[in-house]
Amino acid sequence: MFASRQLISLPRRAFSTSIAANATKVAVLGAAGGIGQPLSLILKQSTLIDHLSLYDIVNTPGVAADLSHINTPSKVTGHVPENDGLKEALSDANVVVIPAGVPRKPGMTRDDLFTTNASIVRDLAAAAAQHCPDAHILVVSNPVNSTVPIVSEVFKKAGVYNPRKIFGVSTLDVVRASRFVYEIRKDFDPSTPISVIGGHSGTTIIPILSRVKTSQKLTQEEVEAVTHRIQFGGDEVVKAKAGAGSATLSMAHAGARFALDLLNATVTGKSGIVTPAFVSLEADPEGGKIVKGESDNCDFFAANIEFGVEGVKKINPVGEISGFERKLLDEAIPQLKTNIKRGVDFVNA
Ligand code: NAD
Ligand code: LMR
Image 1 (cartoon, rainbow, N blue to C red):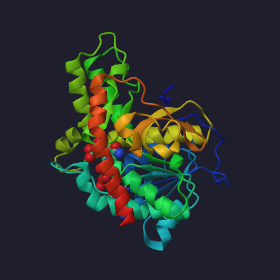
Image 2: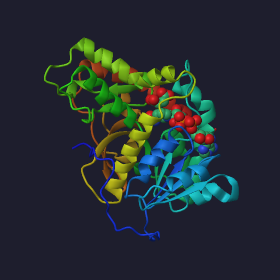
Image 3: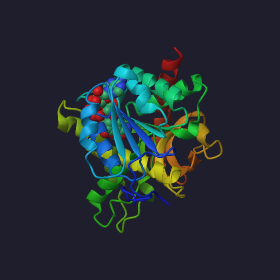
């Protein structure tokens, strides 16, 4: 079964002004940015969170003061680098969401962001490994195909690596897939998730449209056009924003959906929540044998994962795919391996 469509959960505990010892703390790093602010706004509305901790190099005290007036029980704090702000933001966090870094401008690939974002993510990951080594780390910063391996390497070096707790958030690809299919088949419920596997950039994004159920089957021409639109949906937004950044609002929706699914599994113990994420295949050595041949030694992969109370409980196999999707997958794997290696080598250099 796929993840619940409900973003804002029902209250699970009575209103309390004090924060209990086992309180759920979520830290957002890059919280004053284009994604960070709307993401924090959605998270503030969830009663699964007791403490929302916002960190950025600028402006978080203002963002926190603003959000703290919303009449939900959670406490909101804002932190900047001064006065051990990063340590304060991260200490005792259960979940850390990282949208810190620069977005694309027209003409750039996600890989072009590596030069700036790799060191930002590496340094934030090092702080998380030190101050909240047991937290679930949700990586949004691009290029996700490389930044997730960076976080994993940093955690390995710190001796606190748990592959079941490090995720690249690829939910936006799923959100786009559902929406774009709905645009050509109005009998398709746009809240139905569609499997999107591989990675999170261009041709490494592989939507499994062969399993989508619509009353009038998608033609091969439609499959190819929608696949291309999902793979390059990010570019559509970058172009339309014309230099003012990339997807922020749809990403805030997608990031919050992923974070709240995770919290529903880890805090309330809800079972059966399945959603795609870019994870290390070590997170489930059995399920990690998800695709045959070329991808056998691809260390990270966006697959349907099932959440358990400790993060990844199970990686679901890719399952039956069409010849067209198999071809896309075979072409994507070398690119994915290059992206992953770049991240790993960066930390070990
Ligand atoms: P933005 O520039 O609007 O915001 C980024 C924020 O990060 C800024 O507030 C900035 O001050 C902060 N920041 C920079 N260095 C930092 C540091 N060392 N510590 C803490 N904060 C720091 O950008 P955005 O539009 O929010 O995008 C952020 C990232 O998310 C980009 O890399 C973008 O490519 C990526 N992204 C990923 C997805 C996805 O599907 N995974 C979707 C959209 C965007
Ligand atoms: C997206 O898919 O929208 C993000 O990865 C941002 C981008 O650079 O396209």
